[in-house]
Image (cartoon, rainbow, N blue to C red; front, top):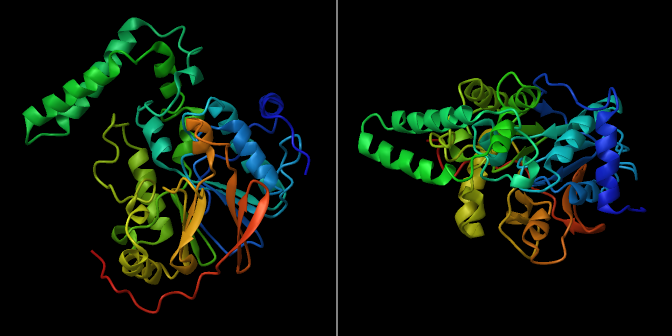
Length: 365
């Protein structure tokens, strides 16, 4: 398939996002359990790298040269952390919202799952965002609004440690030292975009943290044993309820480090160590495999473990962010029981996950 220079994609998609009727998908909570579609394409950790993202979807045959949806009834799963430090963050968000709409019209679907960075911006943490994204914003924000924002954050941190005020004060001081030099009117205006009641804020708050397509689970970090006994709808309802509450500066993940949006438990340990955990979760969830949007391999953006019971799917955008190598473009395709890793337009066979584990080696918490 012919490709176009990323800068041309950027211009094209920014123009498309401005055209009436194509700028956004539905902000109603989407279903989180589906029969297995004919074709699934999973992409993880886009991180706001717009040109890289568009080329990855083109490699998969989901977009044409004008970045319009041509995937028909395919389901695209964005495995969290679509938001990130890439300079093309806002065009990326515009494109995702437009593709949600276009895919639905064609009989397909885009599942925009929440990862750590989505929770960060909804809870007033801009540390993962490059200042170039928001440097042109905030011209009308007064100085006292910045002061109010900082004071509110310090108070929230102190109140989070009711039994240990000294710990809370030290944490608040660290917060002050972290933010006093970096908070700008532009940063605050950027965060305002994701507040409750704002268009982008409401859009993110209605997305899922985990979806089930057929017998396969998709999330940013994976369903841990802590959540294994809860249904997919129950998990999503729990996090929507949390997101309906007041944003909690830098404290949003203290209560559940093993939440599906940011859990990292599957990234460490050998196969023999991970196998009892993965089998237990899959048994309780009546699933054959987990597909997650995190990966800690610099050699293979997308890889698998335990004979395909878990897939680690990274888009490869980290190579572009850190400029350590020629950027790789990676995704996972599922058609029936055929799993294919797509790298830079090439296709590599991957193992088919086995049946649902018949027993759980580990019990529920």
